[in-house]
Image 1 (spheres, helix red, strand yellow):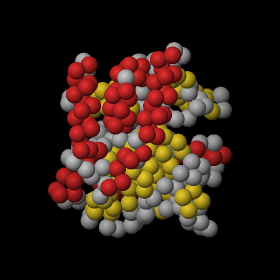
Image 2 (cartoon, protein in one colour):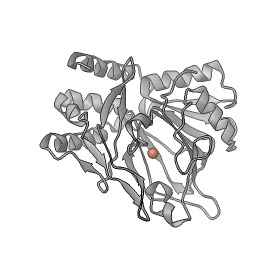
Image 3 (cartoon, protein in one colour):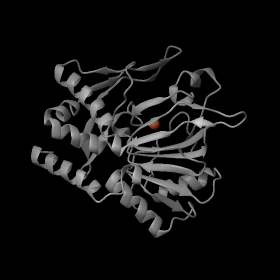
Length: 287
Ligand SMILES: [Fe+2]
């Protein structure tokens, strides 16, 4: 996009919040039957996602029927699923504390805190994760809060500070995730790409980001170093727009792969925190 169009886009995204309803004041959308969404339920989710890139929902039933969750996601446009190794044929992955050795090496499958990131930041560009559903099947005994932040606000804040900051992170070599090998076998090649890029018409921002400091390499120039620091500052300074929630069973978030983090948690005796996750290559849309 040309500089004027970027500036206009930033204004538009800030204006979406001017009418209220974002951040901690975000209302829950009640879903009576996830197999068959009402038009009003679909409209409410699509509206929230258009304005804030995320919607909080609550199913009337707290059961964990994968077909119901999949039907809900499909009704909101999440058709092409990222069939990750941990996902079933519907693209639903149970995120819980792993008991096997491989799982215990991966932070999402431990009870540890998970810092700010977008999902699939290590995916190839043609498999960019555009939308995510995180559905609570069972909460932790303690902790496990999720915090969500619309990355459009982060972009707009950085752009207002200095357009050079967002330009540095739009560079095609801004961020590299090294190759992943297990037992001498290449599981995933290294991925190099931008943090910020615009897709679709009208343009939507897609963000690849992780706040982790190990197994990541940033483009080694002053502009990138400065921009990464500014991004961390912008996330923290937008705390009034952080949506912090401790999901109960049957509750969740559907979003355009917004920034999110998870607090550490403690499981109960015989009851384990479990979040069912769907990743899609399609953004949220109204059917
Ligand atoms: Fe995630």
